[in-house]
Amino acid sequence: MKLDFYALIIFIHVVSAVLSIGPLFILMPTIKRLRGVDMDVENAYLSIVNVVIRIVMHAGHALVVSGVLLLIFGPWPWYTSWVVTTVAVMLLSGLFLSRGFTFVLRRFHKPGEDKNIILNRLNQTSWIYIGLMLVMLWLMVQKPVLW
Image (cartoon, rainbow, N blue to C red):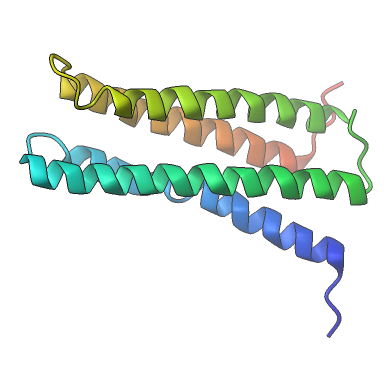
């Protein structure tokens, strides 16, 4: 069985899309359990949060690279409306991911910070990022003509 190079890139793109959104659903129960726990348990949960964010971040890198390869070898030009819109949402989500997760987690152990506010922000950030990823997923699957 011969595996087509383009089909392999599509497979990598789909797997990286799943890995860039799926692990975020682990954050919701983890964030909920972070409230009012001992410092040791808190550090364990924060380790899980950090691992999830790293997986999402690296999967996002694979998603971008495979997406670029799909555009280079595929039938769609760069100026197609759904491609331009996807890139715009992707840049927004990348900025959001770095500001929304990393910045919030750095504040977690600072003295005087309200951990409940930080956890609420982390939960809200997770849902917004999931929404942005779903918009990109819709754009890539549906390929709407927007202009």
